[in-house]
Length: 337
Image (cartoon, rainbow, N blue to C red; front, side, top):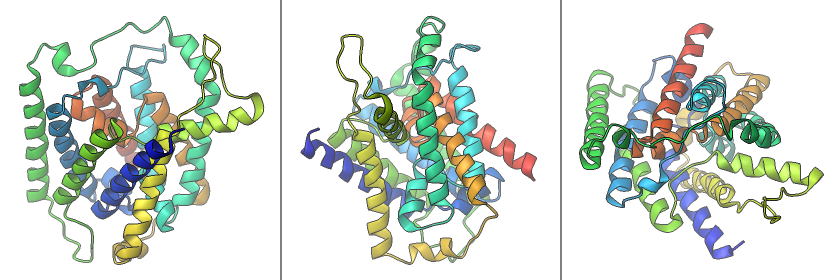
């Protein structure tokens, strides 16, 4: 492993973590309340960040980062995106976190972050344990396809991206007008500024890491480490050792570092979160974390990889995944009452 390269991933993660922390979308209450339609900060930040990322990725011509369909070979080429995405949403409702924001909860000592994180590590272990079987079963059952909507429907890419960014802007403007922030105790950035800051860290990630932001691969890397203790590292077809490069792990570590440093410098960011409580037991958080990360890997990405990065490229798999995330999370919230 190249140390300077890993430091780049660490520092890029720190910038992303600080931006997420400043935006406030890591608060368990904010995430759960979004699923119950009680608070729309999360959606405002998410749409702003995705729209800004769309412009960044298009201007830098990074369409090669569009994610392919996640096919489980059950029903259709996007079945992994639908099932995995729904599992991510369900896990978010159960934990008040996503695979990325749970790292901030751990770094800031916010309950129930540590339990969700342990469950997430379990999800990474489960996924890597069944990964080879999944790949064998889907190798011949999923046909290749175009990756983005505008390629699929032969739409000019400039027009498509501008339309997407404009749509995100219009939705944020509507949410801001009709559902403004009302809690004066909140010390976070306004949602639009928070989303733009996250979009700026996408730019930094592309320039310095040569890769868009994404978190859930880090859990897969840790799962691979777990299984290597029992059976050694897996071998590729040419006999070479398939050892993770740990780029995602260092990026995830950077997210925690950025969150910790920022909240130490600005402890008032914790004041609102520390007074909020949710009826989430440690067991519920751990199970939710496992479901969430397992789903993220089945879908090929999480809210950052598919939502902020993938949707910005109009990748069909990412759009399907994110729609499934919100459907799963909001659907469970309505069932739970």
